[in-house]
Length: 137
Image (cartoon, rainbow, N blue to C red; front, side, top):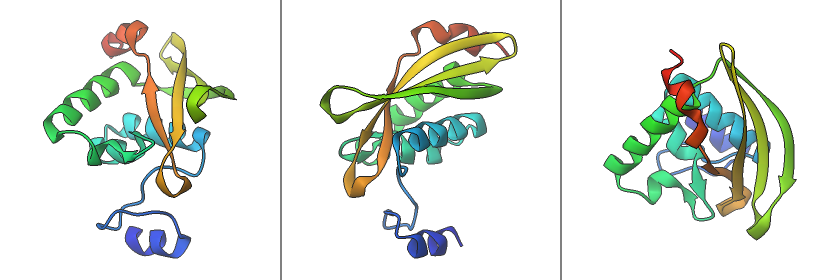
């Protein structure tokens, strides 16, 4: 059913029929955070990427899963609010998001980039000060 919906919408898909990326920078970050909240590493690998496309097409599966689990731990959240969105160097767009976990709050810049077929991917986020989120649950 998802494959049928993707085919009808004209959104870029993999051979498996899976939709990749998002229509814009904000949507890429929102989709990425949704996959984090669900702890869905397969879906995460479709919206996390580079100008070449999703990371699942570019990284060894074992390394990818290790990185995804670290991101899930450090970026878990009860909620978030998109605060700002600005163009940055090299065609990237930085989307600033306030993440909340219980009483913890952090403002994080998520870097996004346009990939193949005009689709946007979350490409980078600094998790250095996010250790309390990992321990928050």
